[in-house]
Length: 126
Image 1 (cartoon, rainbow, N blue to C red):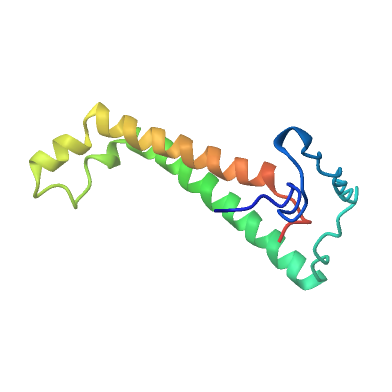
Image 2 (cartoon, rainbow, N blue to C red):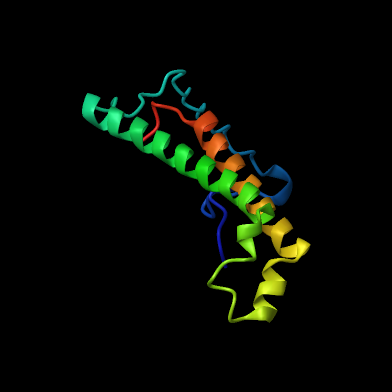
C-alpha cells in the first residue's frame, strides 16, 4: 500500500466524508532570464584578421572553381584533351550534354555556396 502525502495521517480519526483538503502548496515562480546574456569574449586582433582572410580565401576559391566549372565544360578542350584520347567511350560520355550540364550545375552551386558564406559571415561568432 502506497500512502499519499497529501492525505491526513492514519492516526487521525477521520471518515471518508470528513477528509481535509491539503494545504495549498506555493508554486515557485520562474526566475526571469536576463535580457542580455554575456557573450563570448571578443577575438583578438590577429585571430580576427586570420578569420577574415580565411573567409575571403574560401569565397575566392569557391567563386573561382565555380566559374571554371561553369565555363570549361562548354569549351572544346573539355572533351578533346590528351587524357581522354585513348578512351573513346569515356570521351563521348564526358562530351555529352548531360555531363556538361552536371558540371555547370555543380559550378553554379559552388559559386552560390561561396557567396552564401560571405553573406553569412559574422565577426562575433567563434
